[in-house]
Image (cartoon, rainbow, N blue to C red):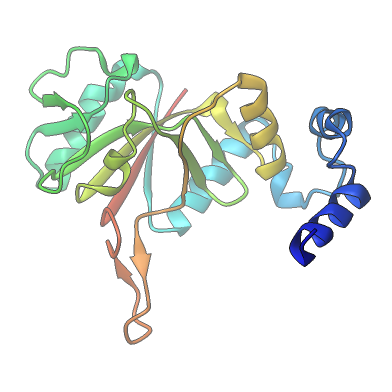
Length: 211
C-alpha cells in the first residue's frame, strides 16, 4: 500500500466513508451544522434577499407574474439594451411559446450571439447565486457565449442557502453532467486591479424572477 492509499484509508475509516450505509445515512440526515442568519430567509423575504444580492453583484432583475409575461418583458429588455430582437435558447419546453416580434433560434451557444436565454433550476438567496444545469434543454454554452445572458427563474425555486438548495437538488433527483453556479455577470480584476465585466463570459446578466 502506498503512502497515499494509507492516508486515504485512515480518512475513510475515521469518517465512516468506507461504509456505504453510513454514507447513505449521512446524505439522508440533512445538514446538522449551524446555518448563518443570511441562509435562513423564508417566503417573500427570501425572494427579496435574492434580488438584492443579485443586484449587488451587478446583475439586473425584474419580477414577472407568470411565464406568459416573458416575451413582452424580454422584448423590452432587448430594446432598452439596443440589442436586436433575437434570442438563442435551448430546447426547454418553457420556451415553446409565441415570442411575438422576437426571432428565436434553438441550439448551443455561439460566439457571435448578442443575447442568450436559459432557465435556472434553482437559486440561492444567501449570495444571489443561480444554479444552472447542463443539457439539451439549457446548453451550458448559452451561459458563457453571447454578450448578454438572460435567465428565467421561478420564485418557488429560490432557496435560502447552500444547505437547503442542495437538499432540494437531491430530492428532485437531478443528475446533469455539469452544474454551474453563477453570481452576476462575468468579471475579473486581474489586470491592474481594475474590475472588468465580461472578462470570461457575458458582460451583462438579467434575471426574470417568475411568480
